[in-house]
Image (cartoon, rainbow, N blue to C red; front, side, top):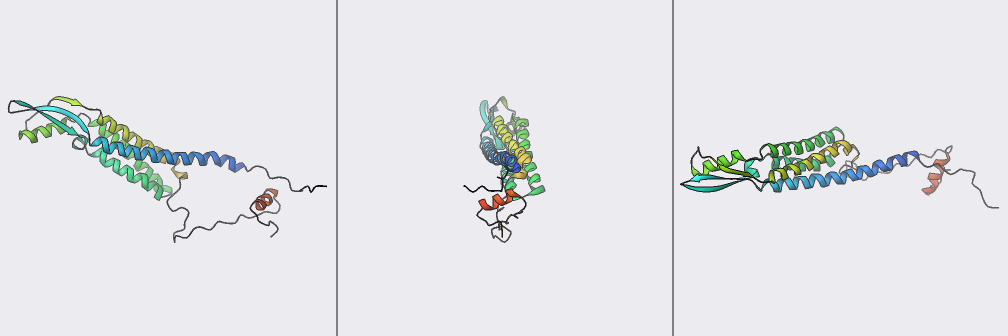
Length: 216
């Protein structure tokens, strides 16, 4: 006769089924936040260096064409993009409330950069200042003002930073931290041996699966 174990097979752990989707969602949110934050910061920095506005001013009876790039119009989006990029890295270096604060800074950096790009999009002030500098006439005015799409590209990149910050606020609590596998002295954390309850068949089965002797 074959041997029949008196110990019933363990029921499937209820926690594992609930934690698996949450773990996968956390990993996906990390990847998406990193992608959005990095891409958004890059877009803002590149678009801020492009021409945002064009116009002409009178100079000695002729018409002089003037241009203003994003940094001349407003340097705020580029500065906030750098802050957002630093905050994105810092999210993984802190824990608890500090992570919440850094995530909020990341989101606010994106929001501020987007608003600054949209509100200063026409570049009129920057072109007037350029006209006064070029003609040495403080009363010089700009005519034929035209606007490019780069301010709105900048705002779109800033919106990606904002989205990364919102993801960090929503899912950041479950994200890993830098050096999380090690203690402060740099030594790897020891794995705590689970306690086997001889009165619980599922614990006995788990111990056998790990190659342990549950009778010790």
